[in-house]
Length: 285
Image 1 (cartoon, rainbow, N blue to C red):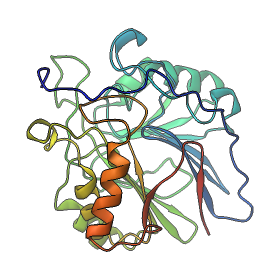
Image 2 (spheres, one colour):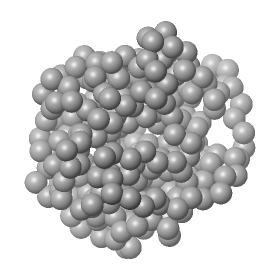
Image 3 (tube, helix red, strand yellow):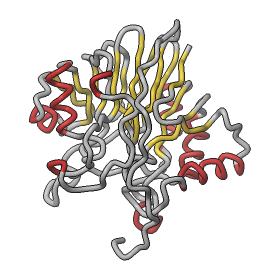
């Protein structure tokens, strides 16, 4: 893979920060902060998914891909966070520096797959609930279920697959919101729909997929994300995991372009599966 040609990315895209939106009577507002980080505001709790505010996605903030966009909402502008969803332990999804800042400022509860509690506690998180696939959280103010994913876990060369990975289904009022975390395509998307019911909004990864011979077992490409959207029978899907860190070979705009092409091929209307500009929100009524 290191010999594969990399499409150059911009060194930095300077975008002004945004403010967290008002709910305005909605049951939830979902704001794209960047990569796989979303702010989910509800009437009862504010949730962050896979939060990363560090400059690099790697050890000690010295190694790994460098951020090319700032977080769309500044850390100091976050509303009170009661719950953090950690899908797995990779550096671009489980950032210890960010968890330390969250622990100091908000003391949130962390919900994560099996085997990740020790890592979260090492960042100062006091309250952690581990789940297996299909388990329901018992410590969340909202109903949350851990769902399967096709991926892997590792923080070092010596701990591969010693912790679990997954996605999350949340019930917000009368709506269901699905956060896929990191995943390759698999038949479990149909199982999620069958077991957990209709999905109003799905947050699906569309980036970090080239070269396919190497990445197809851990990351969906946009065409596979569209098929996952179909399998889930989601009323609406939002693409994520793109445009923030160059993890793989494709260009910065390639995931969005490929998503548009795949959506047209499946004759899915643009409003059914789209990407949000960084800092933009979608509301669930």
